[in-house]
Length: 212
Image (cartoon, rainbow, N blue to C red; front, side):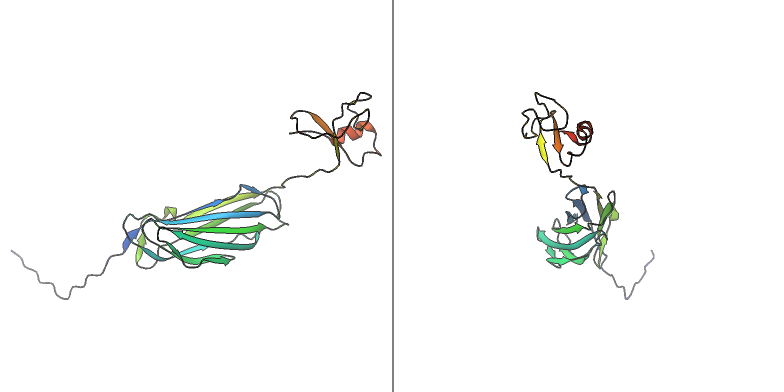
């Protein structure tokens, strides 16, 4: 039989394991220049150990195409926010007990000079605080993307149903034709604006539109 004597043994606490998760969504997949876009950022401590992640670092760098960015934070399930609100980039912390959730709402305006077709990608991340180990880092970052589009096009002028008894479909409001409300899907309507100097055929060809 062998006997071994061990002296001056020091046992340090092993890091506790947690699974911190982050998910980001965007209010719309498309946005027009000058319009507002809102991101929702949700962070949660998935456990499974009942360990509280105290002051877990959270970052979110604002895309360069957004201006006037502000954000707020609220906690549920015992979670608390290191800061309740702020502006610009998010560089803060949250304290997350097991199943605790912190929700960030980020709002900004797309720069009016942003080129149509630009894809705005916004990425946020969370990491384990000192003393804890996140055993699943695949859910520590999340990205939401929205595409800049031209937005709605407004056409002003006189709308009428070009079905007059005298000459129909000539692009001119005549023959008893009156203003119409484009509510009947499938009907053809015409917008007259600046057509007085154009031949009727060209006016009709250039300006007619089908209601949707």
